[in-house]
Image 1: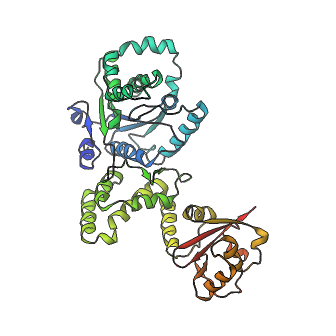
Image 2: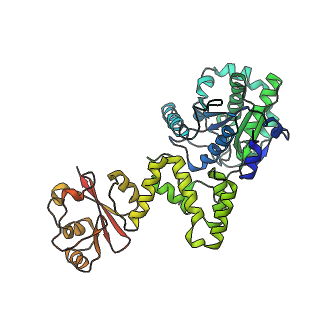
Image 3: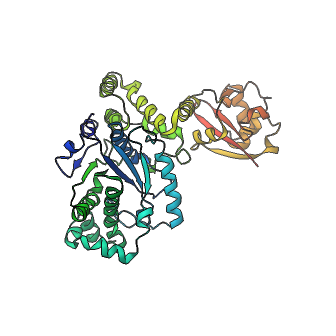
Length: 423
């Protein structure tokens, strides 16, 4: 069995561990868990780093447990935060937890013959505690000096916003998660981002005090791009793993836009491609950077992993459409995702029915006037659904409306306009 720690080091997924013997302990199959915070109803691209680490553990024969924080999500993890976030309602946390369950079910093997993955919700055990019982049975094992000495706590206490008792107590809840999974699943390993070090070691200390056993923590680097920006955002907006929040096309483009400096590193982190293949792609990128083969392979591999072959096909078709390719086979929702950032106009069905393309181009705002639209047609520069409009008498028929809802106008090579049918 290949040692997963060696793989993590080779692929840039290892930051630190709580015990130098952890590599030896991982030489035999064990149980590892990672927690996911339900602050949204979808995991983000940044979470994919942890998911990949879990997948490597499973491929090396370990049983993996993905923990959805249905209880801890009610509190909010202060690690890495400069101020306290707004608390979510119980209903929001429950809905978000279900969304995370759905996300995770696509990446881990729940039918593995010897080590099937498991998803758990910590509300199933933390929700049963009364406040007094938790303080008496768990809180008594934590020393204030150690808790106050954590860097994340010191920084927050020194800040203007300070830190609430609610956030301060978060580490106790995550520590109990480790104890519970040790007791019920034989879990001896926890992985998490490097900002989770204090929470992980709190759990290790609790297991040691109450069970007299040694458990281990492994941290993953917080991935940043070559400019030092935290990975997982596009122009300030989070990139989600759910197609309803980030379209497969936008997801593909996010990875395709990876800089040359980051491409090989991200291929190691976010794909299972052999290191020799990644080296070949790195050499090709150095020799012919304009072809962007490394970025293309990265975008294809990650989009396929997250959105499946169908999602990758849509993303690639979207790229073709934006460069003048056919829209055949794409749905109205596909087009809405592809053209989410272009101007759009909503016209009544009565306005569109039987109207000329010139009329629609003017009414939708693609052209300033019918005269301008007419001149554009005469010069061969007006397109309907990426097909050049042949003459000034051309009309918009039912067959031109995708799913009877939308049509795409274009002037020149890149000036798109989406026409939506109201009602």
